[in-house]
Length: 162
Image (cartoon, rainbow, N blue to C red; front, side, top):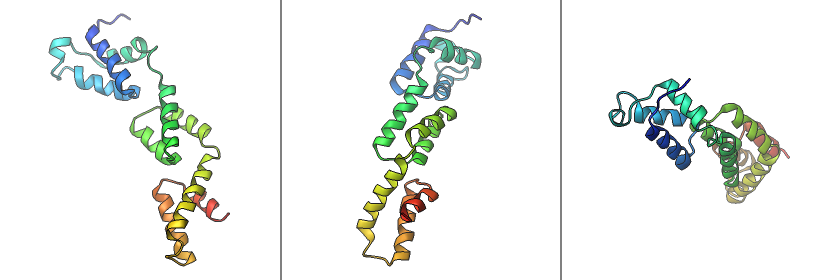
């Protein structure tokens, strides 16, 4: 199926992807925003419909879009900033990345790492507040702080009970 799409629209799609590395869904939203029939630019460059947007993403950008590599890179980046698995998952879902790829890369990346991260955060919190509370209150405060950092309750209990 041959589609007549303005080269300016294709160039814009390539430029936008290489500048911001959005998910394919986000890229489609941006193209709709810019070149949909009720937009400002459609009179100058033409307008596109959903089928044409899908064609641009799947055919014209197929060698450029590296969705897996972008997700891996984002996971590594957040992990290097000591972010929890749930936090990273939430951020990637907000970017509208592929859910299956997110789950796959998070599982690969976080086999034992998250418990080590919880231990590290636990030690930091203990140093700050251990003199201020009795054991029961201290335990509650530690759990509250770790949950606010997006750690799972079950994992927190594993670390505290060690």
